[in-house]
Image 1 (cartoon, rainbow, N blue to C red):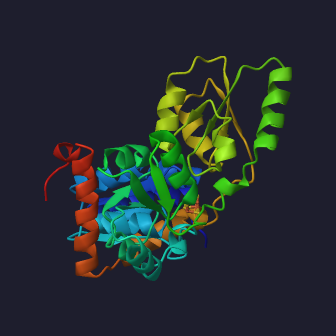
Image 2: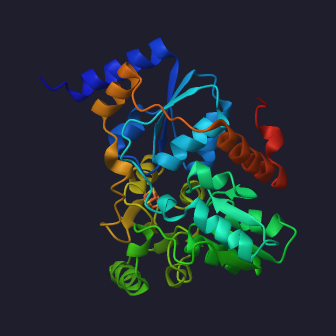
Length: 320
Ligand code: SF4
């Protein structure tokens, strides 16, 4: 017989206590998963949280590269992912072979990898950025030409923000969800809301195409968007261009504000693989343990720490 949501939540709480486990969930997770998580955030926040936790087991409700990142930062801990099919489409667009070929052609160009990349690729990176700090990382590197992958849109955004030349690796890496926004459709939606007398701001994630970013009132990662909406007056309508379930976080922070997705079909199927049932099974059976090669973890961790040092945030992190 299927268990009720309350029974599943109770079982998750019990298993968490028994295992000394913590649940980290990304902002794009379905509402019920966000609600049972100990911490909900974007990739950077979750990385810092993963490094700060004293729990023995980390259950990661996110996609493959995020669970790998938690393992890289906590090699001695057990990291579980409730469903192995939760694989980021963008992260899987970059291979070690592509990086090797790029390095052969441009041996002098520093390589920044977006956190949305696989651990085996991060092991070849000089730095690892998130959407919150990609422009800061590119700016801080002592070079006028920098490479960034796998998201070509994030590379273009960093180039726009810093004025440096940023080469995308590979040339067309992208997030299929953030490709679903079109400037004409956004303008039409905003105009319609304004014609009804609504006071509209349009915010967008840097994984969107540049022609969408150029018409946004604010561009930022999901955590930066949250900070932005926290400071808005209540008579505002926010149109947002990122994964549709970010609306769950927005409405929780600001229940007094109206939030409208710029595209209600901007839905990441990979992020929605996790369910309460799968979380119970993963904790009960210690299913889907993230395993990584030690040498890969060591090199990827060095690239992450190097980035924290470049940004001057390493002192805020616990040493292991
Ligand atoms: S929203 Fe895009 S970048 Fe994020 S996990 Fe889904 S496919 Fe990957």
